[in-house]
Length: 253
Image (cartoon, rainbow, N blue to C red; front, side, top):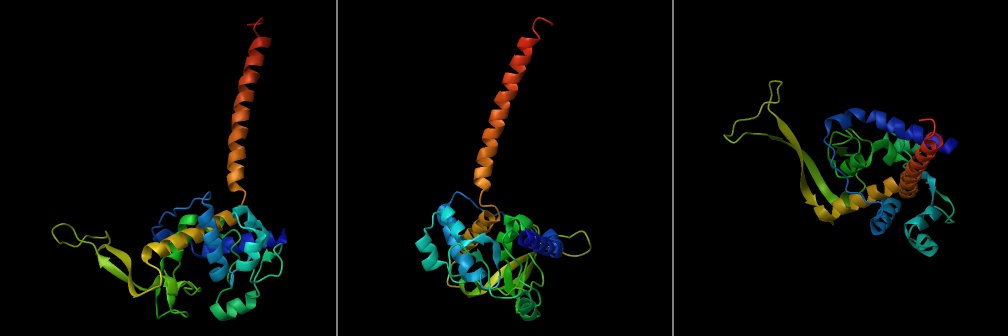
């Protein structure tokens, strides 16, 4: 319970610190599907290889990955890098102190990050990195301004820069933003291509978010299915109760 409470507090703190950035950025809808086992497995592989070096998932056991169709041998051979047994938690060796010293902020636990941030925010965040020489790491993010995390997927996505484009009407006149200036839209332009195309990288980001959403509540599909049948049962029970009441009171009315 203490670990769960600490993870929730870390996620809430991360949410509060980025709230202003969230308000100013249009979030892209994340095309997640928790029934897509192939996507969940791809997301788990990407999470372990790129996120689990600094970020922990202390509420998740490796053995739980069997719920997304992986065997124990597959987990041991392909995903078990920071533990000795499949039953162990997804912890990392990086301490909070070292994380703060190296990055300026301790990398948060990601066990429930999808529940704290939301799938759309995470999807936008993973696709929103760009080069910024004014930051410590040389990277920035549209969804989280001055983020301490470097872009660990930059070799896959490539390097991009932030640009602002002034919007114009059909006659070529600049559109006003209502405050005396011109209306602008922020875009990211690729300056160095990555090993993945834009579509391939978006699929990878989708898979990672899909896995993070699943990890935040592995039983959510079962919960929804059980909830549906509970409502059906209650509906039938209410009908039977009303019919019974009507039968009891028919002589009175």
